[in-house]
Structures are given as structure tokens and as C-alpha cells.
Image (cartoon, rainbow, N blue to C red; front, side, top):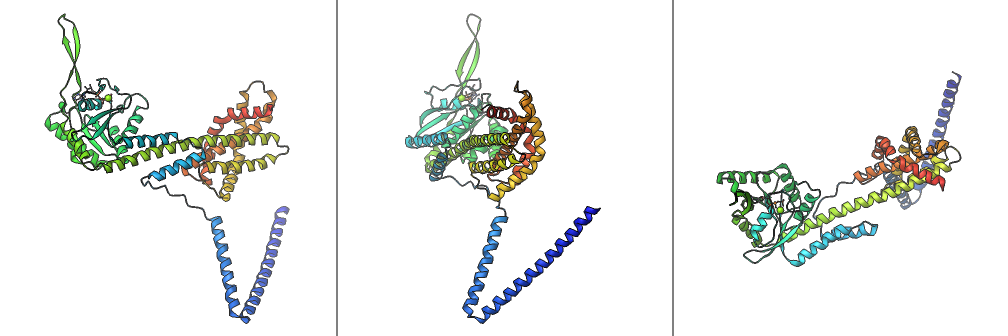
Length: 494
Ligand SMILES: Nc1nc2c(ncn2[C@@H]2O[C@H](COP(=O)(O)OP(=O)(O)OP(=O)(O)O)[C@@H](O)[C@H]2O)c(=O)[nH]1
Ligand SMILES: [Mg+2]
């Protein structure tokens, strides 16, 4: 073919020209290098050394710059979970507050801790599955207290504290919490959170531990909570059965990696109430409630023994656990804040993309305008997630994204067209608008994919963000089309 031959000749000419230029440049450089070298050798040695040193310095600087520019930063290792100190958590709260995060939940946690520390009382929390006998145990310890006990599970639906003074006169607060595993939403969380705030958890069960109970214990151990495991309703078991059960319980905790002392696994009977059906004098049946005899001596001994020791370590462990709760609450609030902020940023970028596409006079202009919008959106989203991306990464993300836009556009146009049909009375206007909506949708999807990867990795990883964009695009388009179509219509009518 003629054209093919022409291209070959042109290429050969370019290669020949390149060869001539390269040879010339090599000759020129060698000549001047030798020239400089001769002159330096003829001159004083100090100048020679200074010159060589300067050249070496320039070479090192060039290599360092190239390295910074080209070599990727490693993904940051996960933060190690060393116990938080008071100043750590306060510092984090201050920083979050300065950004605008709602820190009130985390602050309330710290205030609650301060109030408890000021009172000086030891907090013991009775925790366990529904109907295990937590309230009954408290009633057995503080008979005068007005504790609600019932055969029907879920009798305790809030957190209550009861004052108890042991033999040595230590001021103790017994906390009754809702049983876990019930049907009411949120009660498990309330109970677990309260258990984490206590100095000591009395984990109440009435048989071998279920998977859910083991998970709860695991969670408490992760918060370094001291635990006394209380096997309640021992009256239902023979002495041998009790011994076997206690052994099993010890082994289970061992298997979890928990360090629990033999003395801290006890079998008791809280007593509780029993309902007896009686035939009354008139021949009808009536139900009377009788209290069962309680046998909780071993539990009292275990508690006393623990509190006889120095309680300072218990204070330290409680404080750390509450700091951890506060940190988790702060993280949740930060997550919420990030979602809200990124939603604002994405919406604003989408709106700009729509406006840009509607104002585009000649083909291609819109892409240019949106290159700028894309850069700003990417940088702002990264900032919200505490990532400081290099310009190179932002560019890489956008250019990789741009190459996918070509493929995504027809789909986006189709979704946009469909979405606009939902607004009645638009008629023929739809065609023009669909283009703008399609561009807006692509920005929306790009932003959302970026947020997903930022939330997962904490930094901009262009390849992953683009993969997310490719994989999630149709879902994102469908989810946002109504909103973006409305946005475009609002802009049009303004
Ligand atoms: N046999 C026997 N039954 C008991 C014992 N302790 C409590 N019960 C019974 O177990 C049932 C539940 O007791 P509660 O003290 O209300 O249990 P709870 O763990 O506070 O229950 P929720 O607050 O609903 O989670 C009641 O019917 C009690 O009478 C015991 O030692 N032996
Ligand atoms: Mg109860």
C-alpha cells in the first residue's frame, strides 16, 4: 500500500535523524566534558574537588527528586492499638471538634467517667442473657431494693443501679441491665456498653455457654474487663452436674484466651420467685408467688476477695475501657461527619458538571471544564478522609477514570433519558438535558466510588478507586438518576 510505504520511509528518516542528533550530542558532550576535565586538572586541586563534589550533589538531588515523583508511597500500616491515655483522647476530641465533628457522645462518655470517679464507688455490672437471673441476684444481695424479677424474659428494660455495702464497708453500686438475646432492638447494645463501663462484670449464665454468650465474653475481654462467671440456678443441678458444668465453663474461657481465676467461676442460686398453682377454698385455682431460698455465699466471697485487693488496677482498667468507648464513639461521629461532608462535595461537583455540560458550546469544552471539577472534587474528598494525595495520584485517578467515561457514557445517557421521563411534560427537551444529566451522573458515580475506597483504605489508591467506579457504575447511576435529573431541571429553569 502506498500509505504504508510512506509511513515506513518517514519512520526510517526519523530514525536516521535521531541517530545523527544522538551522535552529535554525544560528541559535543564528550568534548566539553574532556575540555572541562583538562582545565580542572591544570588548575588548583581544590577547584577540581569542589567541582566533583558539586556534580555528585546535583546527581543525588536529581535521583532523590525522581524517586519522590515516581515511587509510590506504601499503604500506611494499621494503627497499633496501644491503650489510649487521657491526653490522647482529649487531643483527638479537640482535633475532631475543630473540623466540625459532633463530639458530644464521646464527651458525654468522659463526663460520665469523671462523675463515677468522683463518687469513688466500685461498679459491678450483672450481665448475661435474658432470664439468666441477673435481677434476682441483685435482689438476693440487696433484699430491700425494689428489683423487678419476672418469669417472662425481658423484665429489665433499662439500666439501674443499686447501692450495696459489703462486709468491709466498701461502697458498691450493683448495675442491673437488660438481658441480651431478647427481641427488643438496641437493648443488647445498652447492656454491653454499660458492662464495659463497670469495674467488674458478673457474667450470669444458667447452663453451658452458648455461642452468643462466648462472643459477648470475648468482647468484654477485648475491653480488658475483669469477669466473674456466675452459674446461676444451681438448684436445678446435682452437685456432680455443677462440678462438671463449672469445669466446662473454665475450659471455655481458657479456649477464648481469657485469663480467669478458678475462684472467679462460681455456682449459685439467686432464688428468684416461683409461681405455685393452688386450689382455693371455693374450688377455683389461684396463682401465688413464693420466693425460693437463695444461696449466693460463694459469689459474695469472690466479690469480697477481689475488692480486698488493691482496687487501683481496677480503676485503671475501667478508665482505659471508657476511653476506648469514647474513641469508638468519636470514630462513629467522624464517620458520620465524613459521609455528610462528602455528600455535599459530590453534590456540588455533580451540579457543576451538569451546569458545565449545559453551557458547553462546542464539543469537548465540557470535558475541559469537568477536568477541573474532577480535580477539585477528588482533592476535597481526600481531605475529608484525612488523605493527602500527591498530584500525580489525582491525575492518575482522573485519567484512568476518563478512559472509562467513554464506555460509561452510553449507559449513563440511557439511564439519564429514562430518569428524565419520570418528569412529565418535558417532551422534546429531554434529548438536550439527557447529555447534562449523564455527565452529572458520571461525576456522582466517580465521587461515590472514591468515597468507598477512601473509607476502606484511608488514602487515594487510583487503581482501586477506578475499579470501584467500573464495578459500581450501574448501581450508582440508578441510585442517583432522579436526584441528578431534578438538579438539571432546577438549573434549567433558573
Ligand atoms: N430455679 C431458679 N430460678 C431462678 C433463679 N434465679 C432466678 N430464677 C428465675 O429466673 C427467671 C428470671 O429471673 P430474672 O432475675 O428476672 O432474670 P433476669 O436475668 O434479670 O432477666 P431479664 O431482666 O429479663 O434479662 C425468674 O422466673 C426467676 O424466678 C434460681 O436461682 N433458680
Ligand atoms: Mg432483669
